[in-house]
Image (cartoon, rainbow, N blue to C red; front, side, top):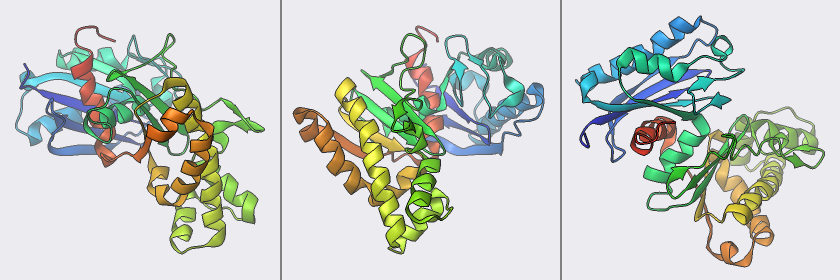
Length: 301
């Protein structure tokens, strides 16, 4: 059993990314990436998921009986315990859909499910920037703000499976996600110079040393420091991992974030806690999803 492969599926509103992995975190063959087509009827979407798994197995010349388990990292909100997608705006035809059971019945294999942000950071904690550490907090900085907590190398869900959902926390005149997100970068930039730009465009301008873009990232770093300081003071992790598309602009906001952060956390973690970027790239989500089959076989979620 220890030599069997794991299948990970990173399933969101835009894409399905599926791959095979060893229990040591090594990707086998080339992952399969296909569009989700989220407005299709449920049966067609499920067929796309099962088809992607079968294609992955075909690419590495493996059979279903070679698979130890399948992990699903799914955009939420979810009922993780029961393997059900709740009212997810990105998956409008799959509201209250029992996804885990559907995949389990198709392959007659153990299937495990968690939200995509948790899976991304879980993959990084086990096989990426947090390897060898026990307590890790990660932020996914993209269109919105995600946060995941890994305690003793296990995903911490909390009593209602909402641990790490800091995005609606009050901050200034709104929420922390209003400013610590891709849309937040755009909002900060518009306030500075009146221009409507995407976070990517602002990063490209920063590469050209545009003053307004650099000021935007400086302001973003200050706001991110507030969110990171809350979690360090509360959880005291060994490391903070930043993932998601916005983390690609780390060099533009890291100095501001660090200088503000160290003033806002307790002295010991201020001296010891590292802030780093994720390093598994586009495969982090499927790696973390596949790793669910390492973590949860004995007490299925």
